[in-house]
Image (cartoon, rainbow, N blue to C red; front, side):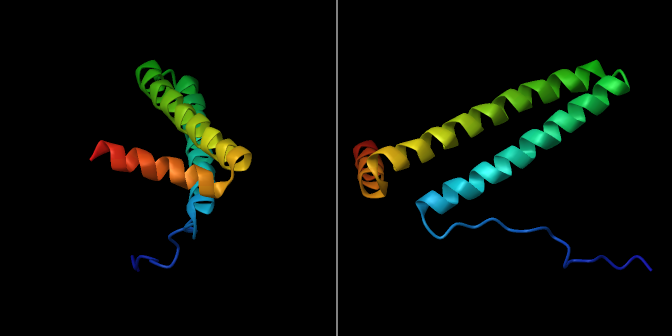
Length: 96
């Protein structure tokens, strides 16, 4: 009675390289986007417009994240992973 099931934590999305990491992040962002849409729909059904508006703002952020990740994946496809990594290494070095 009341024993938690710690085995049911959901699937972890862990990439082994940069491209896989971005692909895993994109999957998680899409899942989050779907959750926000579902929550917004529920809030509208119960006339909770304040929470709905907050969730819409969060949804806009989520869609921005999706756009950014999709752009990064397209860059990898266009310039190749080595050039992509080299460019990002240069940016990291410049900031120090």
